[in-house]
Amino acid sequence: MIKKRGISPVIATVFIVMMTVAAASIIYAIVIPFVKNNLVKSSECVPYSDYYKFDTSFGFNCYQRKPSGDIIYGVSVKANTANNLPENVAGFALRFMTKEGIAKRVNVKEGGNASTEGGKVWLLNESANPKGINPILQIPKRGEIKPYAYNSTESGIFGSVEIYPILKSERICEKTDSVNIVECAENIPKMS
Image 1: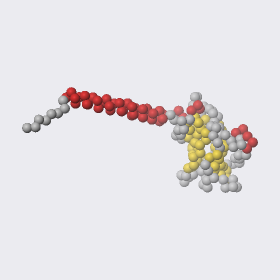
Image 2 (image 1 turned 30 degrees about the horizontal axis):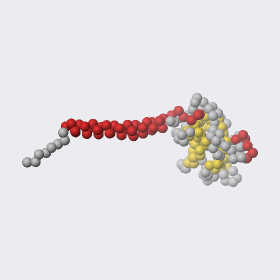
Image 3 (image 1 turned 90 degrees about the vertical axis):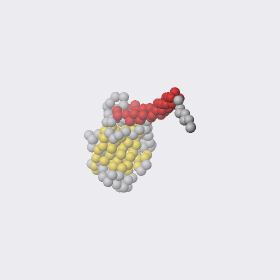
Image 4 (image 1 turned 135 degrees about the horizontal axis):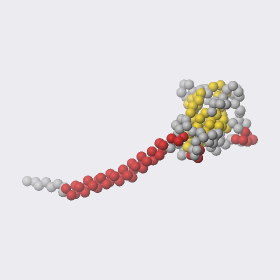
């Protein structure tokens, strides 16, 4: 007869306790920081859910065709008056869209260069572009309205534009506003 010996109950209990401690350590070291970081990131944009809006009081959200074939789009962007929010805002993204669903995103960041891929963005005021120097972009501060122009080299006409806050952490938040773009009644000032 063969005698079978098993693990003593004390040793089995010690192994189970050690495995439980090891599993808890792994959860504490990996899973909890992962969940915590994702919760912070997921709530990072909540205060900015209505930070930028398009201002329609000037009738400036429009486009103009140039003889060169380029199309210049103008938009008026207004920053919310909420307190303490501007310190975390780096700029905004404009997403121009055609009726067919083609989209073009343009990022406008404080202190950024006006040149973008496939066109140029500029702030429509003379102080932003002294003596024809490539302008440095400015974003609206709390409660301000700033007009911007985008010179597109795309062949189609964009029918609407959406705006998304960009935070200093480089996170692009959800859309805060959209507006339809119509043909301008007057000329949009050109970049000198």
